[in-house]
Length: 431
Image 1 (spheres, helix red, strand yellow):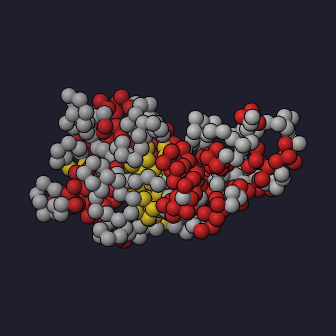
Image 2: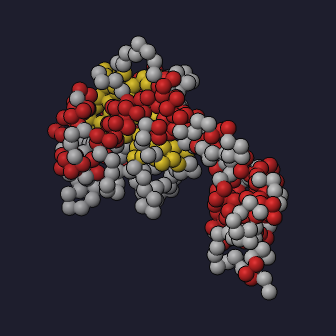
Image 3: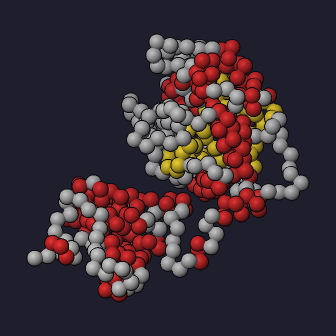
């Protein structure tokens, strides 16, 4: 069973990544940052966690306001480094612990947190500034991660109380994971700062230190503050410290603080802290109950013949293939596929098995493989195959046999669009 060994709190300002990349260890301005992170690196070296659960916010880099979520959990196997405008940092991709991510995702949904999930997204300084400071080298990463992006830029955002409650559910999620893993939870962001408007440059060191004390000794009190309170006390962007409460909620009520620093070089109060868990084992483990709750909603679905739920596991396994089908919405992709399918398969990095299923239009095999139907629907529209043809094929029937089971046997359709042209099966267009 997985164990939470403790929590790390730290700021994630791009200042930190800049200092790492420019080798500023001996510069008097930047040296205090390296000194602050040194005990954290030493603690990690001593405790040797198997996974870091990273809580951060993206800075309009990989996530934009066309679709902005409150809590978005990464379920990928690796995470590339984002270009934030000046080119990507010279860092390798970060390994993800996809199995733990999926388990946490199932558990949080069962706990009635409406999670979003991401793959194929790059990490910006919100995650990588502190992570690069904690790592022992630049050629590889010490520990795989599970990243949780929290939407704190576009209001409404989750409240401090909601973040704290998520942390409590996160504890159940991690501790119910069946593999013996040591997990450290890293909460990033803050402390006081504001980077927009005439109030930019606002800092409040007194509040920063009070926040750190309350965070350690009475985190529940911090949940009583509104986001306006956090903005008043610590600056509008400094209100992102509510993300720390996710980590604190996942720890025991009483924690042992073994390290804390605070430094204000310019725009952002930079803090580091380590909190070791002081939890006691329950007289009766809750693991079985938690796993039952996670599995309850889909229990029995596996016995439904011809039914293949599209799960996080399926999504991760078939991401590349589903993306290929989803990209049928792109005219250039459609054109390449129709004119040179092998080149399209190669460009997308599809396996020989995946390309073969597509080439043969083996609709049922694709579904069993883990493709979501709405990708097949797009493919059908491109190649001139109706939804009804696909339905019949998945049932192992001819179109006529399947149509005989419908109330309107003559109805044929697909998703529509101006590029569809005349369809041989569209009886209304036959002369």
